[in-house]
Length: 261
Image 1 (tube, helix red, strand yellow):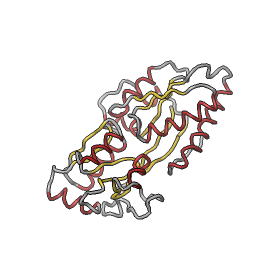
Image 2 (cartoon, rainbow, N blue to C red):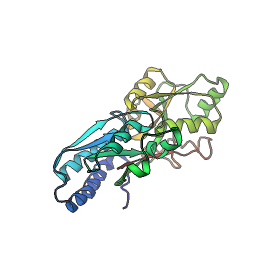
Image 3 (cartoon, helix red, strand yellow):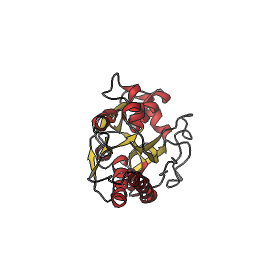
Image 4 (cartoon, rainbow, N blue to C red):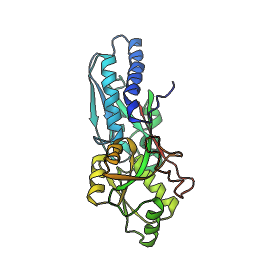
């Protein structure tokens, strides 16, 4: 099954429509399905890219299938709480999980999981791929990743970077940045993107790793600045913002994705 790609926010509606049609086709294969509302569990808090994607897809799924799609946010480290709920639910198609990188790597991050990703979850389709960025408050003294790294090396353990929950793509992107740059920075996990943004704007943290989609309005409004993007090429919507690799950290690249299971 060919994945539906999502790079720019303007494509979210067409993505959702395509995925709604996929599930509508599955529904036709079982004439009685769905006969009641479907719960879509999102293992992240409201306001982030996973939540925004889930809600866009849910609207189109509901229109195609003729039943409400109920969003159930269950944020946790490694997306474990949400994935566990779906793994333990009846295998009848009425409880669906928004998958992400966190689910793919959780088995390698946690000593023991209450489910087996490959055995207990059945993938349906890819929803989209997303770029990340390293962002700072508009008033930050840093104008580049080089400036940031220079200060981090001069003051080890002093700088803080915010991400959403442990084991998320953003959190792992920060850990990878820390390891590859060989710097000592404090990584602070928050429950969701709104909390990370608030912490960044208030000065509670020095920088953040976040998906570009929900941060673009903040960047375009001049509230925060993107120092670099984590992909292997520049983001089309921010052509003057370099990649982390262009900024001097060779080999660094991170991307995120969402899917349904």
